[in-house]
Length: 237
Image (cartoon, rainbow, N blue to C red; front, side, top):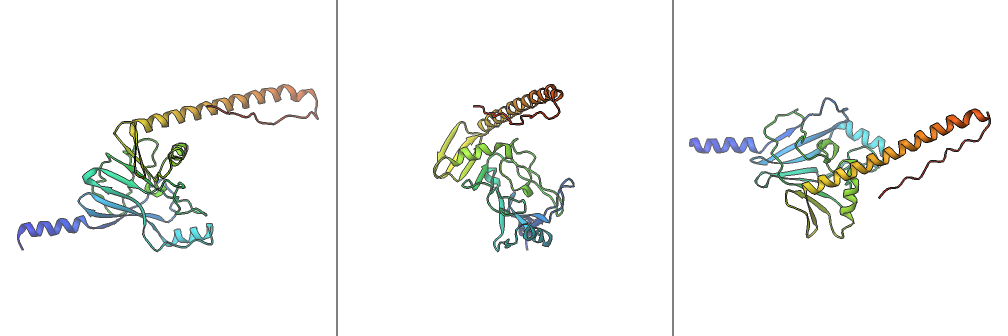
C-alpha cells in the first residue's frame, strides 16, 4: 500500500469515530451522556445517551416512560458551511422528558459556528462561543434561555414556521418553513427582554417595599387589625 493510501486510511479511521463525552464537574450526574459521532473532517453529530441510571430516574419521574428505539439526535455540524443545526429537547426528567422544547419550533440553525476541534473520551463538550441567550450545554438540550422563550413564541406565531435560523445576514426573512433572523436583531430582542424583565422586577420590588412600609405603620394600631395582602397587578408594554 502506498504512503498516500496509508495516510488516507488513517485519516478515515480518525475521522469516523464515536466519542463519549464527559460531564461538567459543576453538573450533578443524572446519568445523561453526550455521544459525538464524527462523519467526515470536522463534521459531527451529537446524540443524547441514557445510562441505566438515567432510564431508572426517567421511569421514577414518569412511570409511562419508554426508552426511544431511535437515536436521540441533539445537533448536527457541517464544517463546509460552519453551521450547527440543533434540535432542542427537554432533558429534565418528568412527563415531557425528551419531548421538543417548543410546540412547533423543532429546529434552531446557527451559522458561523466554529468546529469543536479534537477531543477525547471523557472530555466535556460545551459551546462557549455561542451567542448570549442560547443554551451552550448540550446536556441541557440546546434551545433558548428560558427568559427568551418569548422569542420562540413570536416565531411560532408565524404560520408554518418550524425552524429558526440565526446568521449574520441583516434583518428577518422567510424561506419555506424557516424564519431567518440576524444575530444583531436577536441580540437586540434579548436586551429589550432583559430590560423589560428588570423593569418589572424593579416595579415589583418597589411595590413590595411600599406594602412592607404600610404594614409597619398599620400594625401597631390594633392587635387584631385586618391586613390587606392583595398584590398589585403589574403590566408593561
